[in-house]
Image (cartoon, rainbow over all chains, first blue to last red; front, side, top):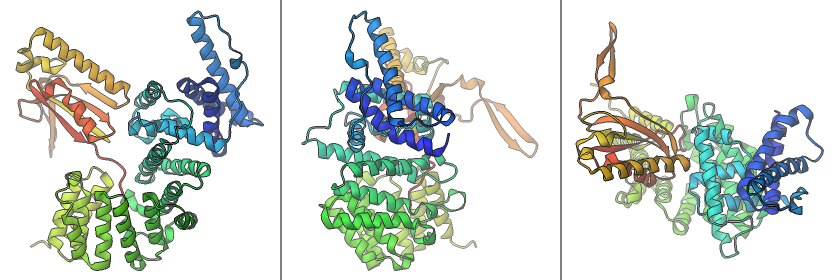
Length: 406
Length: 132
């Protein structure tokens, strides 16, 4: 299988599925049939060559499977019913709209997040169940159950392949963006090498977000999310060191950042900010762009970052934003100001047992020269962390601050 | 997020489901015991069907355990489990849940959480890490 033909049939996946669902209505059966057609393409195209119209080929094969399934169901039910609509394969619709409509269906609010993620990757991303299972480190049977249950729930919720009513659309679109962001993060936080299947999730999230952006080019938050992904992913080559160790932003080799991704993301967020209503993804993208334009960590425009976090804290307040704002405030006004901002979080139940509060407190205490407090908080953060690379990083910071023996 | 669900019980004899072998489980009426066992089956079916159950196993009697330590002379195995406690590990499940609240809900529905034991929930370390 060549990479190019793999990309081709995956890119066609939403159009094939959309054409089937539009004609036959049954999302569950159509999704299975589309997946089987993709598998048939994976087997046949590398040997026999890519057909002249690959989309029509996939729709024809998928359609045949689906119709065969419907016919045998009807035979079992002993119904003497023939339907002319079963005889001709459906026509593909416009690509961009289909992808978005499918995403809205796969990210249906009746589904828990892990199911939204899995169904999106299979039905819209065209990934096989085995690939998705490997990326999330679960057995294939577990992932197959998750996908099958998700499709049952969509059916039970009475959802159809139609765009949601206009009054629901903004919220539903936010859910789609959140799911794409989750997929991106799964891939982005994976360490390279050992975790290749997870790393591909970041590229997949960017590909799907591009498709949403193509369908909704004037939506500022869609553009903001795409820019945020591009600007964050640009740092990937520099964010891990030997053995998958995390390299903090301040210590990354910035010559290894992906300039093309930074240029595209910066251009996108700059034009978006000038014409769309402001939103949380746009502000986060703007912050990433400010980091990206600094040739060295020392040249970072911290006052601008502090301003952006202050704006974000007003627009979408949450404890993680407060943490980041405290770091920016420390860089502008000194660590004492940052530490004072953290005091308010100590009693926040959302931060109890969360490693990020002591991790930031440790960092600011270290900046303030308080080695004992920094070390104690790094060790506490390491104990609370449930990520192996983060825990290694935090323990290493603590060990550097160990008082000299004797 | 993945969690290991550890089922501990203070069992008078050994068998599965283990809560039926505890003093508290033995004291229940026959109907109640059957109902709880059916609830447990329903729970396992539910987390299997939802795609939350990753794996799991029921364990043999701790009396069959061997604990291995090694020193200069090589490995040395002794009879019996590592922990001295009356509450022994009877089985485990690896679950992958949307939230910690959901994992706690699942843990709380094992009969051992109420009768003759306890259910421990341990987060599994993630291989990925956020940028610092």
